[in-house]
Length: 139
Image 1 (tube, helix red, strand yellow):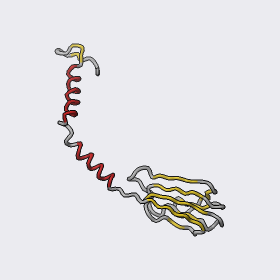
Image 2 (spheres, rainbow, N blue to C red):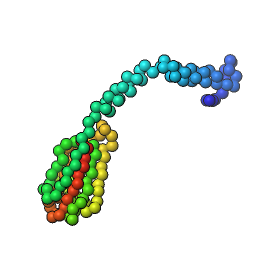
Image 3 (cartoon, rainbow, N blue to C red):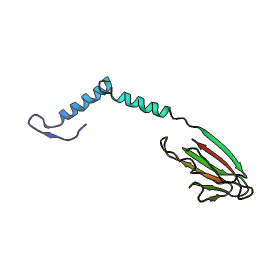
Image 4 (cartoon, helix red, strand yellow):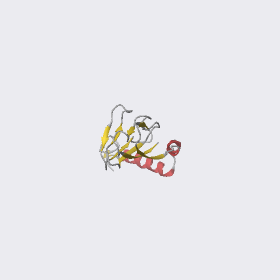
């Protein structure tokens, strides 16, 4: 445990004062004399995380005209399972992209505080006859 050599009048060539302060700090942590302000912070973080409610949803779509998912979403998957390409949109139905049969697309907003806003995702299984989608999402 060495940070460098002190050159002062009482400690020629050592860093004893620094090492002593570090050891005293570690001992205070072990004794519990320093952490009164950390525990409420941890409790509030646990409360915020535990109060988050996630609702899983699954949709099977075949023959549906363009439909939007109106809820805010944490994560979403599209699986094209029909005999024709299904269409999906990530810009509120402005433009659509075809997903071929057997293709799965997964998207995740990242953390509990990040979401995709409602009406971001649209799907269309009506334009191409035989298109079908499994859509799963967490909101």
